[in-house]
Image (cartoon, rainbow, N blue to C red):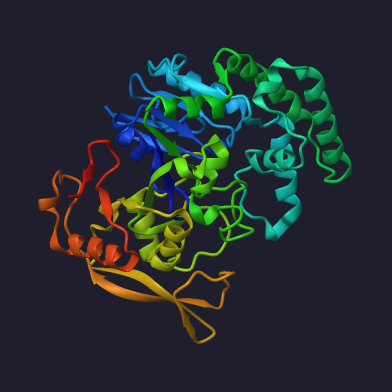
Length: 423
């Protein structure tokens, strides 16, 4: 049995949580392979809206195994709040959530280092969510991080050593006043650690490969999006982990030859949160119209998202990096009200037209658009593809022809049942 991978093809916020929830009945196991609690996966079903930050999006389906992989970084405070929120809604997930011992822990001082670092950058800040994720990955790469498995092995000594090192940085390098904030959150952090201990902590790489050998079907769930990948995204305005398909191998311990389908998710337009280049961004009434219609505000931070037209140059780049075998188009309904829909098919840079994603997205770049007719009709009540307006069918066909990859699902609303399989 091979593991299928589901990931975002843009700058994140593509709607991965909803799709994982919809696809979960087809799988035995859902495994999250990277990222931290800046990821907010929103799901709507049974008149409820749920936002997950660390826990895999398959958790609401019964009798499914959900795994937080070694590539994820976990904040015990966020994890505790997430568990409490689920419990208040009647969901007990203690029996079907497994956590990798090799996943790294976000310490209370990691958040403070994140805030101090961002403050020190001034106007050049990258727009961090200030969740402590970057500093945690920095400690991981520096071979100084604390992992979930350390909870059971000389934890107090290891914790104290890292905290003192971080405090020294905050005091002597950043000159950051931290004491009041640190004291307020450390108690809750240890309460989160106590809660973590009650879950099944596993050697996830062995556990996952055993499940595959038992012919269990597995869906690997990514966070953020391809264009935020630490190596291949719009650096330095990226996240701190590998968001691409290769990240599923290192973030779960799956060999490349065990990867099956690669399902890429994209919005029918583009959004981005935080700083960084965005070639098709609309800083006008059209952008405001997209933001309002799509309710484009961060599910974790509440920050308004920057909005723009679909960028096929960036999309084809993401398809290449991930080896995408099929795509899912989200938020088709957000384009319902537009007479004309623009799609970027190339970039003009210093008078030269390019169709490949460049090393750097500079201010000199100008998008080249193709204009397609809008459908000007309400998609939210549609339940079958034969109800699609011709203009929507043409939009889908244009994207498939340009990318060479089929679109197998189109979403026409936020709810679980507003997800239409094509063909």
